[in-house]
Length: 491
Ligand code: SAH
Ligand code: SF4
Ligand code: F3S
Image 1 (cartoon, rainbow, N blue to C red):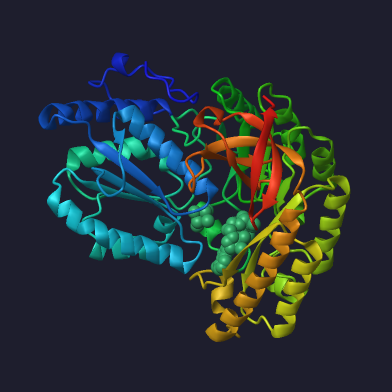
Image 2 (image 1 turned 90 degrees about the vertical axis):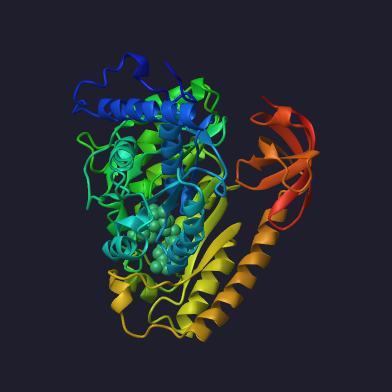
């Protein structure tokens, strides 16, 4: 039986009888199709004298990235080797459509794949993810991108092996898109990027319908995973060397509301805190409207929850926040920040901000700058408002002219950057625990690690430190990261 990195396959491929009809129950059905695809890979090897390669490219957020790990897990079980995007026999784009530019990038890259497909007769192209949930995208692909082999959406990602098997048998373009689902399929394989840390989905979909946002339309209704399944997954992960988890959901603060036995996010965190071998807990994203005092208290008392909270504000103007359907005011947001800072004084706060939402006036924008100055974010992702067809904001009047947005965006970015540089520098001279993640991209004699507050530190050290917790003196802050010096191994 082939084992995955801790998130193991439950079925023995060698014992599977492929002359039988596929089982109806999941995930057994998918393991049946994985076994079928394995046969195809065996043939490929014999005919071509090499192992076929695959590459999954992520275009979107952390949830999208976690989905890509699931696809990689399935591909590994099938027998594919991992290749780079420019030479792989099977290229899969896991797409994003949150802003128009994410969308445009995919079409651009697809255009580049086309000539390669002509040269390599084995080559296949798969498209999945949020963009595929838009009807007009699939129509366009069917018309002008006939060379794509498999198209599927966000709700049926677990069916990847079955769709691939259909494609291998039919030689036709396979398209399978669902409008929504209430199903969560557990126990499928997974291929983590890092051995020592992992994302863990705690919920799927979103019910908030912020008026600018396409996510609720492409990710479907909110549904939470069973707490037991989450805890068991994390236990399996820790047994496999993971010490840090990132709990993932579009709005983790509303976790558990739709469960048969409702549970709060704070309650879930307390269960996760008990898991031996787990040292760090992160989560994203928190919607301010649902962030409870219970959660603040749990964060204040926790030994494992990291000192970092990503709390998207989107705008500082109550008027714009109302039009965005965010359901909090500027004052409520600032009050929340105050309560969090009181409970967890050394917490690092980060945010998302949209500039140029329809009807945004200079005065509204000044309110956003005011929030940025008052909160003193450690960093902020700033976005230019992007019109998404089908969302309420797309048909709102008073769309802001491009030049005005550009001017505000540049001013905001300057403010955010100068505040962030100061906010980050406050830890200079302290010794902090760092989880070492990788060899430093700029200097191979150095490694890169992450503080509890999510800041990066580069310091001299070798690859044997990867995955270890190390005490590091933060010698010099360079804007968004530190140069440090190792003081000792903590774990
Ligand atoms: N669920 C998360 C956000 C997911 S999308 C939350 O509510 O915080 C990530 C970020 O993309 C959002 O926080 C928002 O700032 C940005 N975003 C979403 N839709 C956008 C749009 N139409 N134009 C520009 N930015 C957008
Ligand atoms: Fe989009 Fe709002 Fe849902 Fe976040 S909470 S995914 S911004 S609709
Ligand atoms: Fe993009 Fe989908 Fe995430 S639209 S931001 S990949 S949920």
